[in-house]
Image (cartoon, rainbow, N blue to C red; front, side, top):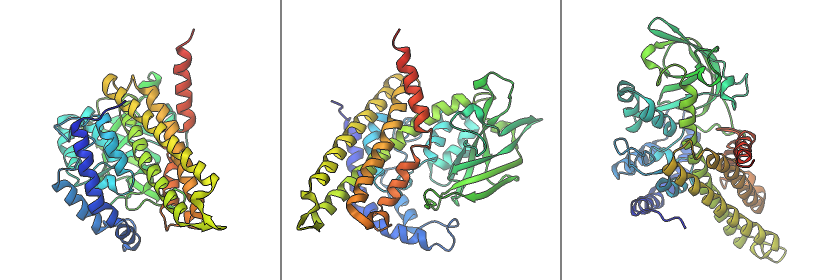
Length: 401
């Protein structure tokens, strides 16, 4: 059986205590402040800023960072139960500076950025002073195949010129979003996986236009949002290139593995909370003479949900362990497996909870509709189910003659 380190247990205990003292009591206030901001995209919910200051003061900050120069130094396996707890509340990851897409972008800068890039962009991200966006997906091509990317990154003297259209650029709407990591092609004639590059683009650079912010089943995920962004003759210094020309696919593989496991950790937390809500509702709600909790169909939903959550958690812990011991590349099958299993599991568990809540489940009163939207879109985000199933099958088929 998996055994967590004392360090992991200590952080987990502190995070759970902080959640109980500060995060859960602030959920309603956060929702009210987000809804009532003068504009949806200009400003910060004051309660969020207060919570971030408290978490930072208590040393519950950048816990995802494996490198002790930049954060807590926890491994993927040590961090897994902590991120699960953060996933129970949508705003919680940002409170602890462990929110997407910043987590992935900080890991890219820490792993692939040079000293100057780290000083200029990683340091303020680690301090929580700014936020970031990752611009990869495009509306005109199937971006689940990264080799399809059409955005161009062309060298002109001491600059690169970027042209293209991106969408689902998460974080671009946040008022503190100051830096974008943009993936594009700098050499369409190179070997298939060496055509792409990644480059740092300050979001105030001339030529960047946010066309719109996209809803997810009607939810805009304010204040950070998901943007459709056009780059028109955007010029940045050649020194903004990450790692070197043609290294974008390599960086993407390093970035997306940890990002996928973090999504899965958070979704397990959401599924646990949805199951808790289901059981409370089932005990309290009486229909046709007895509580819903005494109905066989509801009890089956509870039992199946518990089995599915625990199965998914064990898969995630196995993937985290393998990433730590053998590296992201060797754990690519396990990462693909959890990306298939966990979002679908969370979707099913949340759907059962919605059903037991009846009409209330599809309203905003219980938070379940929002949870369902997040679980469902993560069957597409960071690679759709079909791509990951294909990757799993390929590796399985190689194992037999």
